[in-house]
Each structure stands twice: as C-alpha cells, then as structure tokens.
Image (cartoon, rainbow, N blue to C red; front, side, top):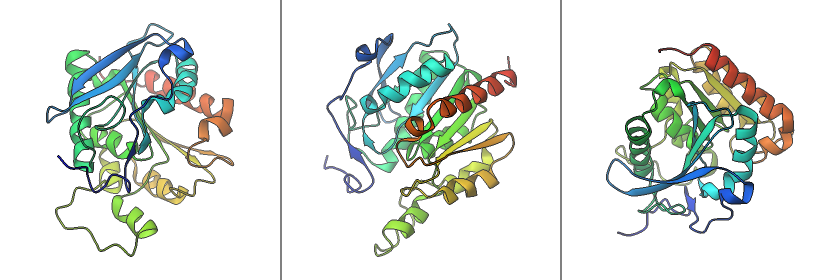
Length: 259
C-alpha cells in the first residue's frame, strides 16, 4: 500500500524510539492491540502511583512517536497519580500500517474497544487527553460516552480552518474527504473538560481553543499558560501547569458519574 498523501503535510511519523520508560524508572507494560480495521498498534500502559484504576488515555500530536512524550508523561503521572496509557497511531513507532486521517479514527475506535473490553475499564474510569491533532481523536470518543474527564491541549477548530490559515492556496477538499472537525463535536460532549493553551502558540492560535470553549457544555475550564508556545506548555508552566491538572483530576473524581 502506498504512503498516504497526508504524510509529510499533516502527519510526521517517526519509527525509532527516542527514549523508553525504563529510562525514567517507570513501571509499564508493552501493549499491542488492533485498530478497527485490524491494523496492529502499539502503546505503553504505565502504572500510576496511587493504586487507582483511573487511567489517562493519551492521544499525541502529529509528529514523532510516544517516546517523545515520556518526560511529559513522567511528570504528569507524578502530579496526578493516575495510570497512563499512551499509544502510537498507525505508522508511528512500533504501530503498523500507513497513516491517514481515516486511519486515526480507526485506531481510536480500536483503542476504545481494547481499553473497555480487554482492560475492562469503564468510561467513568478514563480521562481522555488530546494534544494538538490528538484533540480531534479525544473528541471523537468523548461525543459518544461520558468519561471521567477530557483534557484538550492546543485544541484546533477544524481541518478546514487550519487549511485556510496555512494553505489557502490549496483547492478545497472533496466533499467526501475525511476531516477533523472539533467544532462539530465539542457541543456533544457530556464530560468535564479542561482546555490548556499556550499564550504564544503560533501553530494553533489560542482563539481556536477559545471558540471551542464557548461552545463546550459545562463544566468546563480554561487554563492559558503564560509565555508558552505550542510544545512547551508543561515546561514553561512548570508546577502551575501540573497544579491545574491535579485540580482538574480532583474535580472529575469528586463529580464522577455512574458506579
């Protein structure tokens, strides 16, 4: 199968790992599962620090692979105590297949089936975390189930608006083209939602996240990280960033729905 035409424009996957969980002393499990179309995907299930079943499910951005998020993951686990499951989309890291927008939705559907059936986690035990491109995939799940919470960092509005911002010279997409549309999904969520955005994010303007925030149902929270850009929110925000995460997790657990 030929490489997707979106590779190198929308997606920038890398195969080699930059680091592994052992480098941080993290207790983890290598996990392999299937996307909805049968493509074999890979992820890491990192055990938390407080013995909880509650798990952050992490949808990363469009470049690198899961190994490039390990420093962030290490600090987030330390701050929240939750388990963290992070996985690679097809063609990233050890995941097989060829990347495309359609494929990422199939990956996400397969992930949900795996964590709810194979790991027996209820939606109320899952906190979805999407960064950048990953916000579209977190919302893809959040529109259909009530989760413990949803954290959206560097959220964008839609493929169409990003295209207008960065590639207005490209002809409009075909009507049947698969697209990301957070504007269409944000009002359908029924979980508490936290928006995080760097004040100086010039990749995805903060106004996009603010537009989504206005449309999101309550309860909702917005944390602007002063002076942060697109990829350094947790580094620039330091303890304040992780304090907001900790407060959000505590709120979600105190207001959990279901058994």
